[in-house]
Length: 124
Image (cartoon, rainbow, N blue to C red; front, side, top):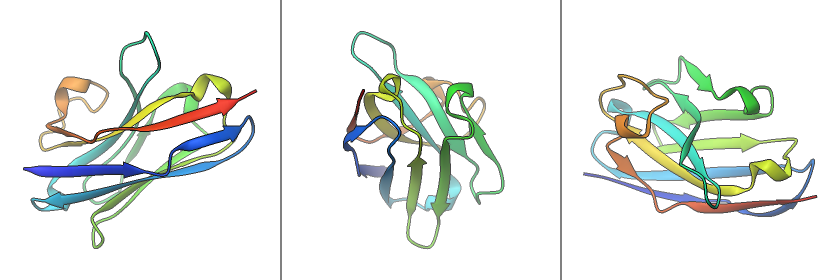
């Protein structure tokens, strides 16, 4: 079992920044590819970013490229999502997720464990 707890969400004006954190506990953190997903009201949960087990590779959804940065600290069992130049359309609940087998990091079903989510609201 892996337990994931997100933090760092909140209300921010358009153009502002937030840094989300995800604390992991349980099994060996470096065994897992880590991802961030988001879900806006009335929409399906969608991929935002992912990072390989040792942070060598990162992946982003097109709309966040150049604005969001995913990173991880395996010694601290943490993964982060730095979000800059936020837009109202970034408003959603953001979820941290862990995948033991990274067949397709963009798909919800590839992930084995999920956090409870943290709300991000961007006002215009």
